[in-house]
Image (cartoon, rainbow, N blue to C red; front, side):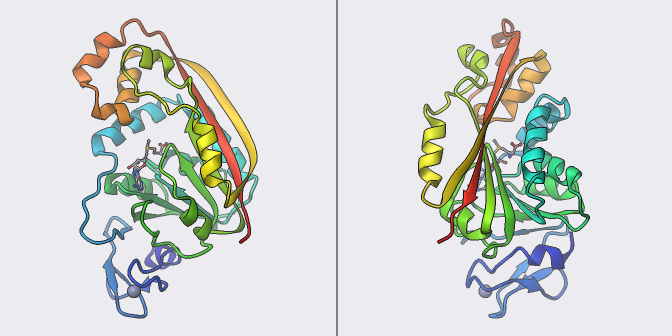
Length: 278
Ligand SMILES: C[S@@+](CC[C@H](N)C(=O)[O-])C[C@H]1O[C@@H](n2cnc3c(N)ncnc32)[C@H](O)[C@@H]1O
Ligand SMILES: [Zn+2]
């Protein structure tokens, strides 16, 4: 991270003018609004004093464990393949979590000059993502607010199991840019759901997704991944602990509830959307 590369992604959250490196560890706009950059290398640009929560450090630890065990490696490879085919220079990962997927993309990048911005509501998530690669800058921001990211700043927007803002994704993508969205399929974790360990998945998630994005993006391709994972009790605990069910499940009860579970379905849809001109 450098203040220069970070600032090249960003605009002022107050007046929307570009941000540039200021004195010390700050970013400033031409009007004089000034924002501190964390010494760990990311900016926090949240509107007002509203309180936000993203994934906690415990959820991120669980996600790190599960991803490090390689269970979602096929998904990580599929994402890297789709994005590499675009030969992008600038990749924005919205809801980056641990940074696992954007790291995979950067690992396959042909040019040294490829840069990424990891954005998440959780400072702990952004800190991990930035720490994991020199090619990644970090931003703590809320996807539901006007993003403090410049118009057309990204060649690709990546969005994996995270909230979406269609209007803002369209604005921050360059003309003709790619939006890659990954969502769970109805069968994802169905065995854990049957054991009372996972939350329901919204029916017709794919139809809702294409309806909500269709005015601004043309669906170019849909890929499906589905696999049966032979998980250990420890893997299952990590899987529950890293997702939304963590808020509703007592960790001490996971072991007994998961006893009869042998295989767990992991099933995803990957949607490639092309930004429409407007
Ligand atoms: C299920 S996790 C997925 C993380 C990562 N993409 C992955 O698949 O490993 C969802 C992420 O979205 C973030 N998130 C939730 N609400 C958000 C918001 N309003 N704005 C930005 N990020 C948000 C969470 O903090 C979390 O890191
Ligand atoms: Zn400003």
